Amino acid sequence: MSKFVIDQSHSEIGFKVKHMMITNVSGKIEIYNASIQANDDTWENAKIEFEGDASSISTGSTDRDNHLKSADFFDVENFPKISFSSTSFNPNGKLEGNLTIKGISKAVSLDVDFGGLAQDPWGNTKLAMSLSGKVNRKEWELNWNSALETGGVLVSDEVRFAIELQFVKQ
Image (cartoon, rainbow, N blue to C red; front, side, top):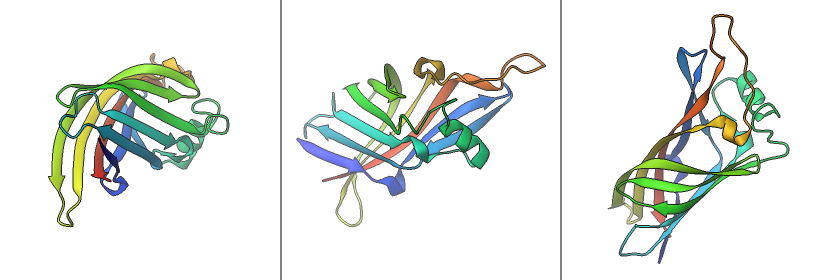
């Protein structure tokens, strides 16, 4: 059994949400930990764990970030962590697991682009993958919104993930 831990300097937990139905706002979680445990001979059904600090959500706008951290969205005072625990992993297909936000756990499925293993110049074994997918934020009671005079809403219900992960073998 091998354990890999996140290499944060080569990883990013990103998301995008449509704003005013015409453009995307990008954000990321800046403080997090993640690990993978797997049999050495196969990555099938590796166990992947993630925990992020909800107060580290950043979109590049202090006012928007403060709103996201408020009770209207993530309520970081009462729910400081965002977590994910895998239930199945296919390196050539899907990562499935439970995403917990605001104490609510829901099953999610993410597409996997498995980069594989490589040795870095210092002899460390690295593992890399890209993950993508989408969820409906209202399933985690991230409900705040505002109707637009022209029709539609200010913030889309759909959140898209763009995640780049690199791990180092322990």
